[in-house]
Length: 192
Image 1 (spheres, rainbow, N blue to C red):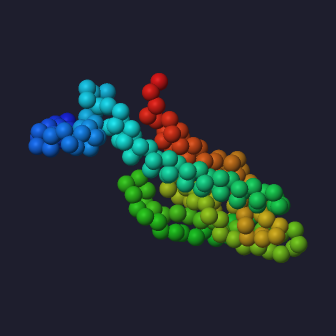
Image 2: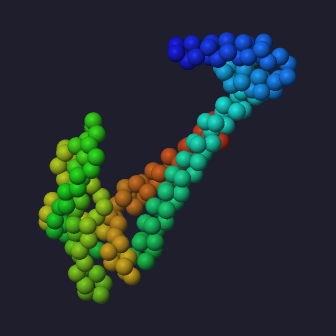
Image 3: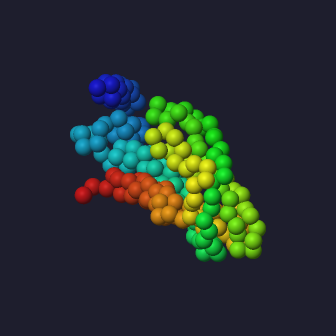
């Protein structure tokens, strides 16, 4: 409703400007007219649809590219750890409580398990996992629980939980969302 009133006001301004300016400002007047006309409406021509869609599509494509890069980086990080990694069974020795931002759906509290495991060369390694899983508002892991992990042999503090969700699904989510944004940005305004 409000956009209709705004569009009508824009058209009134356009016609008033057009009468005062005469024919000398034809191109600029057509661009302004086409920008304020709704797509598919009479008067919406080749200038407005292209300019309006580019204004919307370019940021979507840029955000999509950024999110794809984050997804590729996440998958690459997990692949590097797993590629030069060894499997181990780690024991949860502590739970670190991290206070994040509160939202309507979340209290913002995250529970990061601290695990210990013995590396191939016999060194006992302790590392805080950057995962926060909750079950009914409580931490999914308790002190004494066992977690299967993969650690990097060269840098044993680089650890990933050895589960499908943590190794493949979580890193692939940004990649998938970025590809969807790219598709929307690149193909969104094409006419079928």
